[in-house]
Image (tube, rainbow, N blue to C red; front, side, top):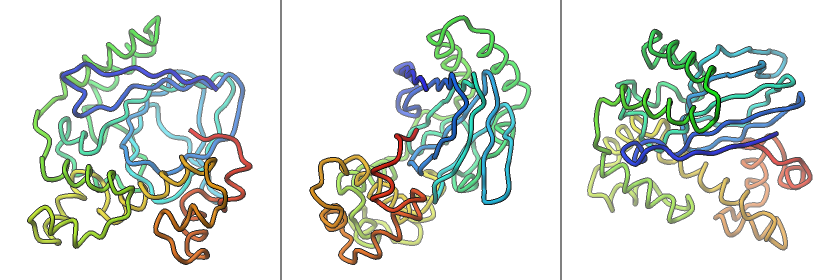
Amino acid sequence: MNLYKFSPSISLSPYVREYMIIESENGMNNTLIPDTYLVLAIRLNGSIVFYEGAHTTTPSLQIISGLQNAARQLSYTKGTSNFLIVFREGGLAAFSKMPAHELYNQTVDAGNVFSSELLEAFTEKIQEAATHAERAKIADDFLQQQLIRTDNDPLIQRAVQLIQQQHGIIKVKELAASLHISQDPFEKKFRTYIGTSPKKYASIIRIRNIIEKIPSYTSLTDAGYEAGYYDQSHFIKEFRAFTGQTPKEFLRSPRRW
């Protein structure tokens, strides 16, 4: 699998983290673990199948995925390639009035969020582009046309920053108090912009922080303790729900995207 990354223009960087192109030269299976970003994906070649138990789903050409609460299994056919727009936390609000929480645990046709007509034209240009750098420029132009606001909510951005600084080990009540806002309106606003609750977002940050550091730990017990899990069985249960595997199984498995 080949992975290419491009930065958005400076004017879009507050809302868009990066553009990515993922190429699968050979057919392969993959596991997607939850992350904190919403993603718009355009299929350039090949096909993808999502697996949910005994059910399979073939996504449309243009899809947008919200934040997920568990790992997802999928497979790529030989020669599959996809162009991804990876939004920053709260970034979708700059381009769409759809509350991000409506996409939670969902992967839907991107026409539910953006104009189908504009998406078709955008997809055609992306597919016909000669280079990946050209595709990134086309994505920049498309998003500039979709821009409906140029301000990020400062309270939500500060909340995200604090959760990240604490590696997800933070209590929502204390977080809201530090931001001088009542917990209920804070949680509602957070879900609208980020796509899930502050507690769930913190959980994603916490587990992903463990995953990044796993190779450096002398024991998985230490990893759980450092992440605030003082009950090892609870740590393993939550890790399995998040990744589909126990920590030991995860260590032995191939890298995921």
